[in-house]
Image (cartoon, rainbow, N blue to C red; front, side, top):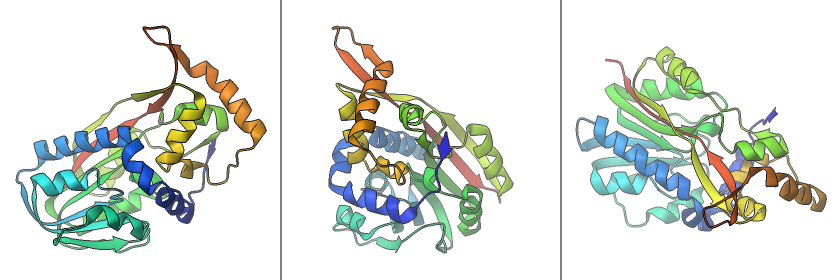
Amino acid sequence: MKNLEIDKAQVALRFAQAGQSYSEHAVVQKQIARRLFNLIQRHAAKTQFERVFEIGCGSGNLSHLLLKDFQIQHYLLNDLYAEVQQHFQGYSNIDWLLGDIEQLVFPAHLELIVSTSALQWMTDLAAVFQKANDSLLPQGLFCFSTFGERNLQEIKTLTGQGLDYVNLDQLREKLQNQGFEVLHLSEQIEYLDFATPKQVLQHLKATGVTATASSFRWTKHSLECFYQDYQQFSQLDTSGQIHYRLSYHPIYCIARRMP
């Protein structure tokens, strides 16, 4: 399997192109944001925060939950492209830090850093963790979801394309090495079912995930082969209808900066 060099400009372009369709089609990502939010509620000792920073906010699946239930005086949002700002009209407590988070200086004096379904795009996760630790106040929380090795495994199997995901042990080690205490670390496998293999690809395009294949080009022949080969992931439901499965592998983490 080929682990791709991540082209951040290509990632930004694909997600920007999917901006209008993302909210509608990102079913799993919304569920993940809700689960992460529930974990934040469980582990945060308070609901009032002076300064919160979110990495890769996208259309705001997590942001809107936090803004609704927590009192946040200053919410700093990051993403690769300015188009995401359309999802945050009418807020007076938001500022933006646009660009590749690996190239940017993190805001200082943070009580909470959050991120959902974004950190899998990082090329040097340990460096991001280091910057997060440096910018959090003592006892500050770093709460995120990312994806594990079985994420989109059907696509990887058929195309050889995929990100270089980390597992729970690697995540725990990287966090502890950068001065975090890991309070919660868990994983799940989620499945989406589609009526045809073509719908699988349409779903991936609508959620911007085709950015994982920036160097991969579909041809008529490769599409036909993909549709044919995807039959191996077909199943019959209780009514005898064929459906085609796509796997997501979310990982949830709550970490705290050591005092």
